[in-house]
Each structure stands twice: as structure tokens, then as C-alpha cells.
Image (cartoon, rainbow, N blue to C red; front, side, top):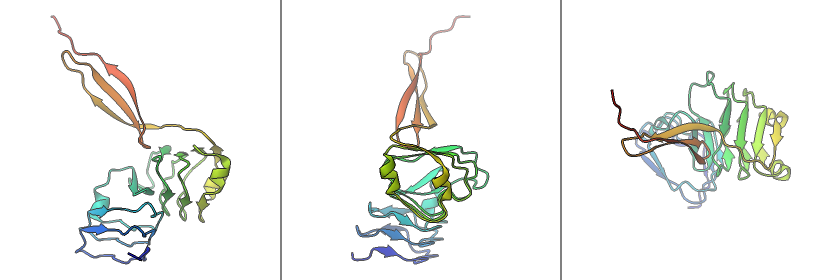
Length: 212
């Protein structure tokens, strides 16, 4: 339980790994640490201390392959954006409100990304996390003083140049779920923000009888 770091390529290509249990002291997972552990499908008890994750740490694992095409989180770290990198039509992202860190190269080559919503829980931004993006606007729920305390590693000049709006909460609704209307029962259409916030938008009237 004294282990705090998982080194670079520590378990790469280990096809026997199916699940990993972390001790509470782990805070760093190196580049490619679990890369190509193709049968690895679950991580148990990911500690809140984990804020530094290297590029490709979980790529080509069953766990990663099972993640949906959007921001992939590992614990409270925004690990990467999963999708057609280089061809992503993605102008804005709202990170989860409990996001403590952004992993290195997390949004690398997401060219169209212009706006990101970040909560005051953020503490760390890894190397080149926003390299070759088009970040122009940052909506931050904390103060300017809090923003200046965030550790921002090299290759993130775009963040320094971007316009920042402080002490503001802004939601970007990218997901919609609905319960269809039936005879005698109204339906509900609800929109969700990536950060986890939801807002009920529309009530769909119950279906009535039709006469011809």
C-alpha cells in the first residue's frame, strides 16, 4: 500500500489482467501503463488522489473500448476525448463538475474545440492537453485567483490566450433522453449537460384518439 506511482508502460501488453484494484495512495499513472492489456475491463476503487495520467495509459484495453464516444473519465480525471480525432465536429465541452484534472494530450488534435466549461474543482492540466485545438473561451465557475492556482503544464499556451469568464456556471446540452407519450400519459423530453446537470425541457402531450 506504499506504492504511489504506476510507471511508464508498467503493464503494457499484459493479456492476463482483467481487473485492477488500486490502493488509496496512487496519484500517478504513467504513459502507456496499461496499454494493450486487451482483457482489462475494470478498475476498482480509483482514488481521488489520481490526478496525473500519461498519454495512452489505457488505450487498447477492453475498458477503454467500452467507453462511449465523448469525454472519457478515469476517476475524476478527464482522460481523453474518444472519437474521430482530427475530424471531430466539437465546438464546446462542459467537463463534469467533479473533474480535478485533465490528462496530458487529453484534447490533442480536437481542432474544432473552441469553448470549454470548467468547475472550480480543477487542480491540474497535463502536458499538451489542449495542443492543436481552437480554444478561445473558457467558462470557469471559480474566481480569477482560483484559476491562477491551477497547475498548467507545458504545451497549453492556448489556455493562457483564451478569454476567461469567471464565477459563471454555463451548461452545454449535448444529450437528450425522452420518455414517449402514450394514450393517457404525457411524455417528457429531458436535455443533459456533459457535466451531469439535467434540465427538463418539454412535456409531450398524451396521445389522443383519432377519428377519420
